[in-house]
Length: 152
Image (cartoon, rainbow, N blue to C red):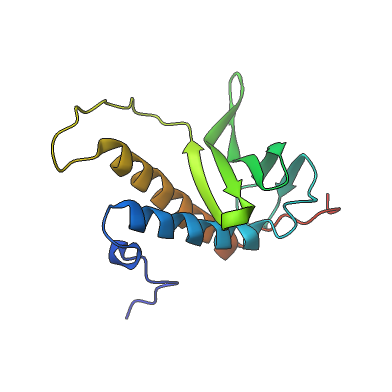
């Protein structure tokens, strides 16, 4: 018998269309709010440490009244210092309660696909990236990560 933390079916967020993408943005905002409950007041750089898990690093890149931009990553030691992976830059839109990943480090090069009728490669790319963010945020909170203001 297999126990799942949560249904992760793509159908839950609709097809790979704009409506499904917006649902992912909204769900990511809710999960990010659990991970960083005091986003409006947290320090510029914070680390969440959980026994048995990698340290999770958060950096507030920019903060405005209705938006915030942050980086979320793990740090892996390398011969030249540190490798940040996935080094995700996330935009948070408080007024519409949405969060989207706008960039992250990728090991493979991104191929550019020509537009064809019925295909929207940019929408597909955003859907894949933000689906990753949604799953990663769930994983981080499942591990017990949380960023609280005033906690070193």
